[in-house]
Length: 234
Ligand SMILES: Cc1cc2nc3c(=O)[nH]c(=O)nc-3n(C[C@H](O)[C@H](O)[C@H](O)COP(=O)(O)OP(=O)(O)OC[C@H]3O[C@@H](n4cnc5c(N)ncnc54)[C@H](O)[C@@H]3O)c2cc1C
Figure 1 (spheres, rainbow, N blue to C red):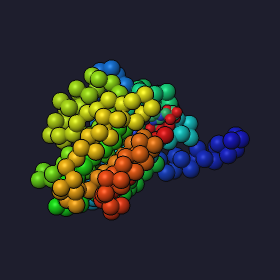
Figure 2 (cartoon, rainbow, N blue to C red):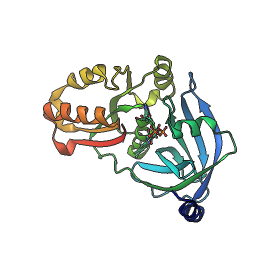
Figure 3 (spheres, rainbow, N blue to C red):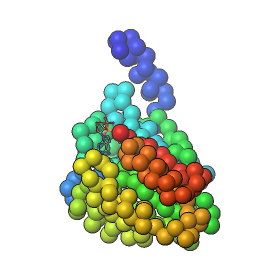
């Protein structure tokens, strides 16, 4: 991009960007998974009815999507749960955040998943989808029937996930080297087919794994309407 275009985009950015503020950061062990509590003074969360993603500025003209979870409309706060286990601009950005820092974001838009009342909700994904599933749980309410599993590369993160989010009731499985998880696929294959029509699946995260799980679910006889997919990264 030449200097003039850069300056013009910079001007537009300044016009459109909103500012959130980091209230607190909780780092898992090892420090490649972070929970970031944010205050978003400009954001009315009272009408949130679907999973959402926030387009955060992570560098010069660089944006990454992260899912707000655990929001409180009264205090205008929420939490982002971010996997920073890989080399990437978003990873570097989140690891550099400190309490009190501003977080610039372009906006918050729908990720198009919402709970289906009366159905058993099955969540399947990886670390990047934990915020997405917490958000679905919040939207579904306390009486919701939830099951499912998350693939988590770090053993200690698996323990932390099961401890911190025990009320979600999801299993934690290892990943195979490829980013897929035979353990998760076996668990899906073993689901009792008897009450199959009662289930709706929400699959999110690593795109090749999402596609493979979708295929597996279809092979198991679940209909397209019962399988809701959101690819996050590849
Ligand atoms: C709607 C939506 C919601 C999302 N919500 C969240 C969220 O709440 N939390 C979250 O952590 N992520 C979330 N993501 C995913 C996140 O935006 C991407 O993972 C993003 O690419 C990370 O940016 P990066 O700059 O760190 O890596 P990039 O520069 O995009 O990628 C650098 C390299 O790392 C690889 N890579 C990217 N992400 C991962 C990963 N997670 N694990 C291993 N390798 C990876 C890429 O394949 C590439 O080779 C969401 C994505 C979408 C589309």
